[in-house]
Length: 334
Image (cartoon, rainbow, N blue to C red; front, side):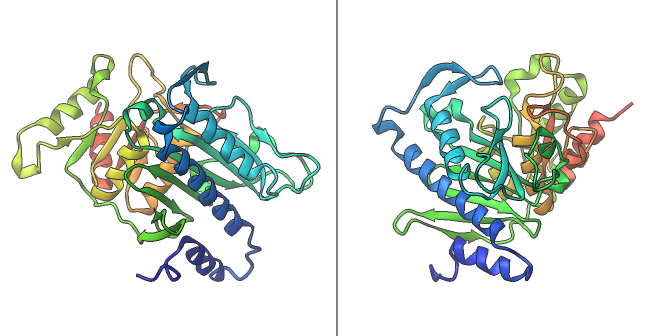
């Protein structure tokens, strides 16, 4: 395939032509995200060769141990955008409040919420990790400073969501509401090339993904559903195979490509779930829907939830449309 015809840059230009009133700001935003991804990719690729692996001895706002690469990824994304004039504010899973833009510079029409390095507890084991991002239009007036309210929007109002997967290859996967497209970084030319056009998740898969180390705290409906997936019933396509990486981006990426279901439910230890709505569940739910799948808390669609706080946690059941529907049927039995 021709590098020129299928680069991310050319794809963004082609998308912009579909919108005659476009100002170019959104295209520049995506370009900045890809640049940040390249910088983080560079550090992840050589992490074992420099003093960037391991813990810092600090905890983030979630009470989780902070990895050195977490800090690097967070600072890289903030630096890429704080003087760009493309955003009105940012919100990071690593920081307690919103990140305002410098008051003496132009402020853009969008917000950016991101998890700078999902799965970072796996860094030292050389397991796939990723960056997740979500973009909304600002709600506040353009001549005012952005507030937390600009971020507390339901996922259905996202104008773009995606992730970067750092592994044997680095991939940028995103949607602007017109399908899901994947781009693979070619390090030899420093460009993301279109490798997966219009990704579609199978309506039903054969893989389930859940942290079974939490089984002691599961509610009975989840126990029953997982037991169902393990049952010997070849006529119904059972049993399913179990695959769990423990890095959300990696587990979701596999589910996007091959179908099936990923679950991180609420349990007796964490009734509200573990994953963050704004930084993880909502952007991945947007991608799942655009690829023909679905995402739910088990009772409500993730994209319909009205966030109440920046770091709100939710249960997440995401994947193939029919698999998520079946899981919901187990969780909602009287």
